[in-house]
Length: 176
Image (cartoon, rainbow, N blue to C red):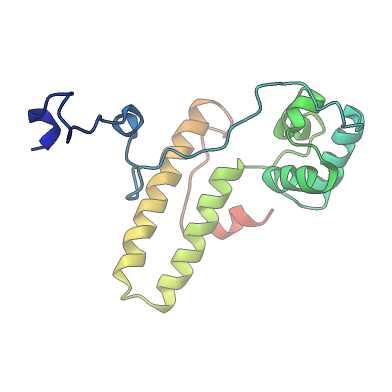
């Protein structure tokens, strides 16, 4: 039992419980209970020092997508090389929406793509080291995430209803 339950709030050894700690929830596949995350700026307008026009940002996004970069990689390039913190603040549209408008959006969403990629890597490792029980367990977790994410994207009509993850043909999905 927790010792704070028996001490009054005025007792010298009483430590108040942190409300942030009480509200943190554990991860589904992991030990972490972390609450750290990024903070998006409150102001939704582009900074006054940024002279880049929305059309220039959209052109740059399309050019980087044609080179084969994923939406998150495009965001990193815009932030680090062009001073655009959030494309939405400058253009009014997110990067994926800009890509959709220009017909450059990826076949499957990026988070699902990364999960399939990690499953392919894990399966290739297991083909060489078939006695690795930890890797086999983590492959099951990854595939559970793939199935859950697929269900979500089918429900929101991002993926077609007949799309199915198959471990044998997963490498063909990665051929962007």
